Length: 212
Length: 316
Image (cartoon, rainbow over all chains, first blue to last red; front, side, top):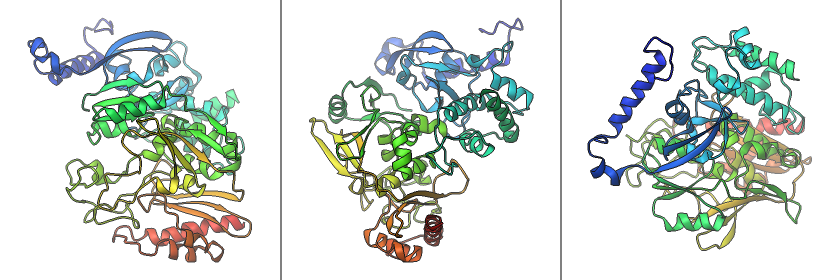
């Protein structure tokens, strides 16, 4: 395992090992009958992405989502798989600076793109202001939606700064504000089943105040 | 998800020819609807033609004072365009009423028009559905139909067009520009773009196989006040039960298209002429011949009240 935490096994290690064994199940007989099975092997593509500032080149089944590329192939398990259908927002990452659902995008569609995940925003020693604000304001409970919430929140503040309008604006021709109503509307694609919404908004308000 | 080969097209004509000539091929742009459906094996393309490299991501003025919106302009970019916000506010409002910020960043103008219904039986591959599996029957007719259509539907299908943007495009009299596999171009009025289901609910638009949308054009601005009022089960990130796209002039005349009620944006000329008489007069004409189910008959009074709210705001 790549964790190298000295314990021999970790929660992440178990997840990675589980994914590997699942992959074997998905391709029955792949190891013992490669010659006979060659004609049914799925189409592959070479994909080069810049993930958190590092260029990565991978050979992937064309079906691989950007989310599975990050989690299963690059072992960046910060980005979470919730619904895998674009409904929950747990998989939100920034691609070329814009927030998207990584589950509803194929890796092959992102040739040359710059991807930023929660691991790329900051480090435990040097948190991104949004990460620090989530800690300060208790913007989570179980934490599963948190990486998506943080990436989305960073995207939201940038969208407001760029003047992207929203559903709750009275006058769509005006510049948007950083009001609570604006934040709530713009974060509606990120579900938190623990219900940490009010603290997430407080964290966003603090960062918006600093960057305004 | 079924396996597929993948290629990127360099020109619109090349993309159209590739899909026209390759059995099982589909275009992919943002992918937010297609990939969702592919994961469920409701869509099973064997070849994807990615159109993202086509230079169709600009919004430009037209010679007659309108706007030409490239097919690949994202929903976010279209709603945020300065000219759209000031002159075609109904379009900004409709787009911002739909989906989530993440989806709007990826979803395209053409893809929004082509998104497929969210009828729960279309999504449930264990159930009969004439749209997903022609001839298998419609589970919605005797099933849970609260979200579904009340007019323009058929005995084969009562699904709705799920989008918001199309209602705005319809009141603005937009035109859909396309290129086909032979390189021929044509312009389709938005009124003729989506089909009523009839006996063939699996055919949702009047596009030919391999015909690619290249742009959507808007005529010169209408003036008036612009509204998109959407009624839904949550305040954000939910499909419409009923929506009203309207452009209302100072004299009380105006244009209106209803969403969440029919296979296409529902705009009726004779009903629109009754705008100065108020919401009841308009909806009585717009929904004449409606065939709601017991579950969704509430949409008829809801449409009237939603329009009444819009008219009241226009007078305020």
